Image (cartoon, rainbow, N blue to C red):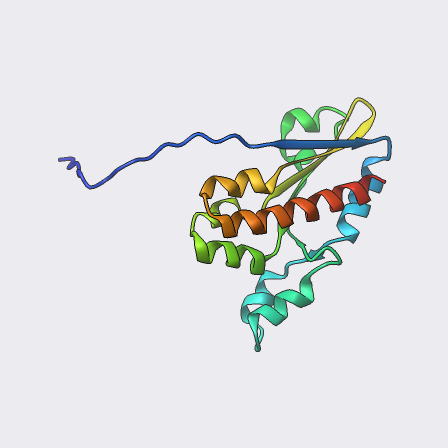
Length: 166
């Protein structure tokens, strides 16, 4: 017998998210390398298990941008339609657990959007970088403090992209 419960509720809200795209005639490898050089790398095992202060461990992993690569997905190898073409595509999860923590302290739902994703890909003989603008992603949480932090991320992400494509 299947029992249904009446204590489940659902909310649906629609929000506008800005997708930002930039391109350059530089090669995929040049752009990806320049992008990655500005970022640290999260070593989750070290961040969670090493003795000492978590914040200090994470800060040591930050890149010059104050951000780090959380994960990389080789989309051109994982997505069959891209594998069959000459398209290069790599998705990065880019952020900083300390920044995410600041926002999640204000609203747990911030953890749904952190870390932001960045896609570097090729199309029309150019290399493109695309990402959802953090202030429009996190802005849906309707918190002035979260929005302030997200606008700082807007600047960091744009600087990352412009330097990688320059």
